[in-house]
Image (spheres, rainbow, N blue to C red):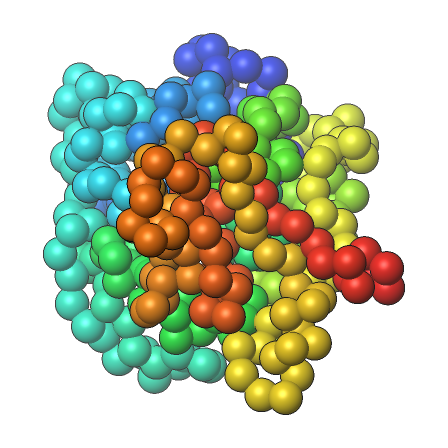
Length: 378
């Protein structure tokens, strides 16, 4: 039986957050169940990019501060970090507000820039990864995902948070090699199993709905979710927003791979009342994902059924970030005849539907459009 703790937390007030975190930890057996004195503990944040905390793109710095203080009080040696999609860890940590907190608490920034290749014989699909040194430099990893929607996997939570353990641009290589969401989810589950966080604490005080994981809208959920089972945690979060967990590939593949359970009968909810946090009007795509196949005779049909990214041209500021992050060669998104005074143009023949452009657009002007046939036939 997997246990998921739901703890009410109405704001990012430091005292309230620390009290809620302690309550959640106690519900799972107490902080000493997860860390021992003098153990090195890595706090794996969600640092997608350097947006202010109010945008809800990243884990909130107050959760980081409160948890760090609890861990330091237990005698742990704490470090923190992530490999952002854009920029280096320190620059993003400074912009979001983590760096100064860490300096005040004398917490070191972990090494997410360098790493090494590893062979993972227990991997079900992926047996080779290039992993950041931060993973190997610590005894215990605690993952701190953000409650957000996501274009590729519908929901980004406990499982997907460990994608940031792959340094820098190497993450883009996986999108090229594994363009379909099901295989990509299998890779994420294998990666999460290798990294093996001992605890997951999801920041759901303010979540992100709509065009996540960067361009969505903040939505108050007012809770923290804690578990040692990432599949159960993500499934519980999905049920709170009336999203069928079976439509989230990291959840279904995670259970198939033995990384946890999404079955309600096998999940024990502890803490505050589940019904208190249910949010049926949360904006998220609740329909099943359609598998995109890059090649083969079904490629044309899939192109007519799988959502396409598109630019709201009247709102585009022509910053070019979407062009820079497109991982395929030749690029699926590029300047038309090198004219940077006009918004970039898509060539959908090259587009692998990784949604990196949509994920990282700083102005939230790249959306996902369901093709006519998909809307017609569901």
